Structure formats: C-alpha cells, structure tokens
Picture 1 (cartoon, rainbow, N blue to C red):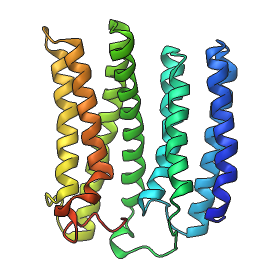
Picture 2 (picture 1 turned 60 degrees about the vertical axis):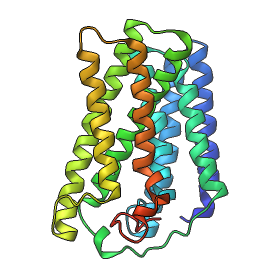
Picture 3 (picture 1 turned 30 degrees about the vertical axis):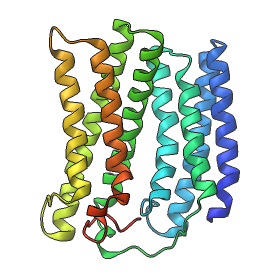
Amino acid sequence: MNWDSFIYFAIVAVLLWAAGAFFAWRSRSKTAIILTVVGIFVFFTYILSMWVTLERPPMRTIGETRLWYSLFLPLAGLFVYSRWRYKWILTFSTIMAIVFICVNLFKPEIHTKMLMPALQSAWFAPHVIVYMFAYAMLGASFLMALWLMFKGVSDSALEATDNLVYVGLAFMTFGMLFGALWAKEAWGHYWSWDPKETWAAATWLGYLVYIHYRRYPHHRPKTALWMLIVCFFLLQMCWWGINYLPAAQGTSVHTYGS
C-alpha cells in the first residue's frame, strides 16, 4: 500500500461518514451508526496497510498524525452521537475529518520506512495513538462549546461537554505518562521542559483548570465555554504550532517529524 492509494480509501470513508450524518438528521440512528462504523473501518484499513508497508507505525510526520486525527474525529463524533443523540455531531466530525484529509491530499509528505533511533521504542505507538484519541475527544468538546455559544447553554449539553473533557483529559494524562516513559528510554530523562513538553503541560493544566472551575458552585457557563475554546487553541499549539516557534527550531527533541 502506498500514499497514492490514500485518496480512494478517503473518498469511500468520507462518503460513508456523510451518509451516516445524513441518516442521523433523519433520526435513523441505527443506520447512521452502522455507516459511520463502516467508514471508520475503511479508513483504519488504510492506516493498517500503511503500517505494514512502512514496517513502522505511521506516526512519524505531522501528516501521518493527521491520518489518526482524521480517524478519531468520526470516532469521537460516533461516541457523542451514540450517547446523547446530538444529530449535528456526526456532520461536524465529518467536516473536520474532511479538512484534515484534504490537507494531507494537497500537502503530501514523503513516507519512508526509515525511523530514527529515538522513535524505535515500544512506547512510541501507544503514546501517539492515545494522544490522538485525546485530541479527538477534546476537539469534540470544542465543537460542543462552539455549538452552545451559538445555540445557548443547557445543563444537559454542558454536562455532555464535561464528559468529553473528562475522557479526553484522562487519555491525555496516559499519553503524557507513556511519553515520559518513552523519553526516559530514548534520552535518559522523563521530562526536559523543551517547547513541546512545555505546551503539553500548559494544555493539560488548562483543561484541569476548566474541570475545577466547573466544580465551583458559582461558576458561569459562558466563562467555562470560553475556557474550553482557549484550551483548544493551547492544544493546537502543542500539536503542530510549536513547529513554527523560533524556540523549537533546532533545540526541541520533538522536531524530528517536521
């Protein structure tokens, strides 16, 4: 399997996700869930095929991590839809997945079998996979925040948003722990406070502050939603924004995939 085949799998997956979103609006939840699951399976089949072809996890470059994000966004949308039956979430998750797919199509990257020694670790795959799932769940909470800012806040919807943050932050915590174990194995220390790790800590603390603020008896729902929006921008800086910071150029141990 090579990168040229990506477009065919992507088209089939997107069509299935779009059909699932359509049937969600038609209140045919079973059909919507089945179509979304099949689309996820098709997209995951391509990722597994790339894994076999490259003889390494497809997680080295930003483009490869976008593959995982494109996979986990519909999965997060499916989780929300299955649990709370928000008809719009499958549409939003499909649109967001299409954005990342299009970025990969219009900005293809060279995918080689070579993997630098630091990435040849048993912790590499679980660290990236867990983080990408966390990003997808927190991305879904960001979409919920935007929706609530536009439509108005309700207690049940805000509770659903909280649950997405709980799941996302839990997976992010595991991702940081796996990353620390990986760093110890690769570089001899658990944490070095380089730009990537600093933004990761800021993102983690941001969502933790949100959770504690929501537990405060006199919190303001609109303020909480704005906090989620800010946290999501911190997450974007942690994921890819640091690659454009002068402080990360040539000094960060995390710039191997840029």
